[in-house]
Length: 306
Image (cartoon, rainbow, N blue to C red):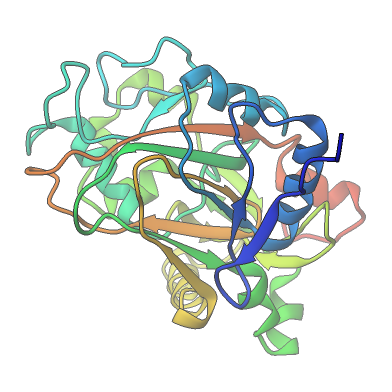
């Protein structure tokens, strides 16, 4: 019997993103997975079209990359998924109806339209995210991905040196306040569960050794610097890193699974008419092995931590 054909990898952008042909994620085998993982480290974002996945299929594939994060219910009073390793990234409630304009979950969802990196506000941040679509809006609702490796590479050498030692404080409150969801709307449990976390400004990717900017709408300020001035610098860098030359825009179809590496990308959801159209998606997320500051210090880097 001849060997199965290896997956075909089709680049989607000059620096970021590729489509994988010939892989059924519901039945992926270890040999296929190794090829997929190698492509993933290179491209940062992978797209799998035409998948037919049950929650357990997505969980199985996601766990091949390591332990999964348990979801935090910031605003949903009831979840649609039994597994606490699946996050509901949808504009519907557990009753299947569209979220109303004043729903707290809808307000939280609006924060996803800011450029962000999943989980940087956690002491141990997110590593990889895998988002599967079962229903999509007929127009709008794209997801854009920014290549933070290419953005870092485009900086002049002096700025690279200036940023090497910097540490940024990240907070879920910082991103949500930008869309009108204030800290007072979080309950005490969430406030205790998600205190601010420090992360490096420049990450070194463990599989490739490439450096990238590590930014997000969760980024509050640079440690040891004036808050407002450092916020201006963070916004400047986010604007620089999200130029079209660094961005791949994904137009969703039902059955798409898209995965991205949070260590070297940012992403954002684009608007759609969420009061007319359903957008039903589920996300699994693997958790990193340690805080990025701790990793950098163990690697011998000098950081300004105060």
